[in-house]
Length: 123
Image (cartoon, rainbow, N blue to C red; front, side, top):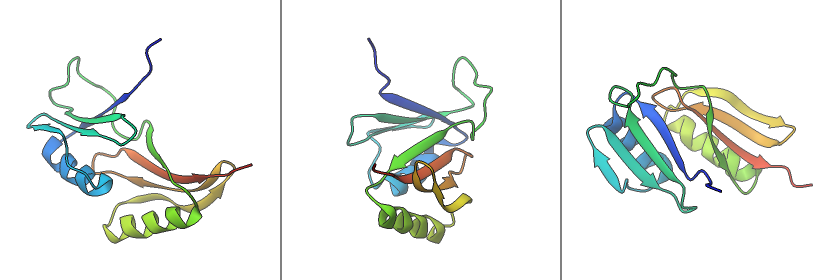
């Protein structure tokens, strides 16, 4: 059975989005063109940034319809990323919050994609 290992985000400007994700992920893209950029994460999952103006078939959904989630070790790591992302003026959609699954916050990338950081509760 095939397993998902590739996330594609449709973006307005792949070069600008690649610069944002280069900072966010602290790594260089392995591929970059005017219409696409690709990052390979330590887990092996690939994150592609595809120009919403050239994707085929045309995409009708806008950012914000899902989340790119970052699971971190503990609440201190959540607070540290919250501070770093606020310092970079990322829009914060949900402030630091305790939820049933863990400690979390949600920010937004330049294209309106939701970025959730959380430390899961360990039972």
